[in-house]
Image (cartoon, rainbow, N blue to C red):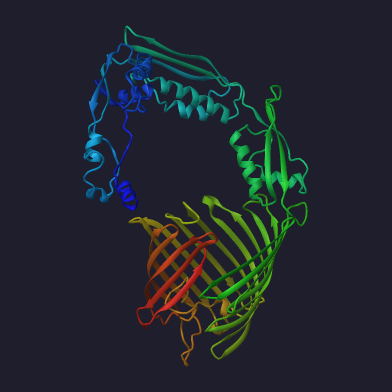
Length: 598
């Protein structure tokens, strides 16, 4: 029985063979259209002659339609059928079959298949002259005649004088004009003339398409229905105003805006019957509110901060103006914090807002120990080319111990920053980039203990290579200040860690004092190049090179590392495991981190 199974599994699998059609004469484009009209690809080889004749009934009409569709009105043809020997198609080329020489009556499986015959259909075709377009009149009349939506299309029609007649392109032209009319609110638009006239004797054709746009409709009243939020606030999500030209795609955009607001679990928008008198279309919106409160809890780990737990509470509907607040907390051996943030939506609430925030943070690394208290107001807005701008004013009071020095600093810092990111896939981008930049400063005597100016630029670039990805990143920070000792730990620069120079501990690199203790620097420069390649399912292997350090103007030591790692695209995001080897100091360092690539 086992031997029978082995032999059965070892037999080559041959595809079921079907009748073949050979066409002699005419262009390949014509052959393709004839095959599509005949639709004979599924006739098995063992089909009887009677059934084959039945399948071929009507083939002359189909061939004629295929010819006429491409402008051939004087074609002639002969369709023949015969049996012919064919070579079967091998589905699975199992190497075990080389050991199986004989089966059944002594013939090999391959020989048995080759002995079968199949139907061969031959079409001898003389398509004749192709009819060309000699007259072309495509026009828009009515109020929409000058609309760029139409004129742009008419300037690049898929049909032109002296082109071969193609019925498909004729129908496509009509369909496109209709679609453009509907998309711009010309709901009553129609063709007053639509003719394709063919002179078979002269082998010429005339196409006349005259479309009367009618008057464009506008958006009418928008009824948001019962809601816990003010109508005046919900109207900020409108991508149009009542009275604007009616565009159906903006209804979809409105629905997406309301869902993205995070106030609703579902949104349905009903388009009312267009009013022919007011030439407007009313909308009726039905929505389901999300719960007022939302809580989140999580656990995680990284070699930078160790194991961590987090908890958050959000009130997504403080009042009917859409205000929200959020309480967030995190605890880990290295970094713990508690924060409160109150958000006021702006004129464009999806992208513009004002945030009021306060919080406390405790950070304890191998090089510093600090507790900071902050209060901040920030205005966030979307600028040109999808850049997000953040204007802020931050109050910071920080108690910190670095090396043998303890100090307290107070700062009031205005700042501005810009950020933008693009990716073809947020989960595992093969192409994308991110840029974050910020400038902040403080003036001694104006609440602040020290005058300073600080600028930062961080960038990341991902692009495909050799079936995998190159992931490159770079970071630069520059500080100008009066007294470095007054600079709190949170504003000093350090290097080393999962997202800096791997192979070294978290924030263990930087300028040192006379006792050899790392005290941080005024500037930083780091970079990395990494290649990863998916090897199985959601797993990828990676290799990388990191370099950089924190430094002062007069002292810069360059640290480098290289290594390899494993990537797992887990349901909660990418997980990275790395083994990094410092090129200067020897040994190796293990790194575990989580989070998106961009």
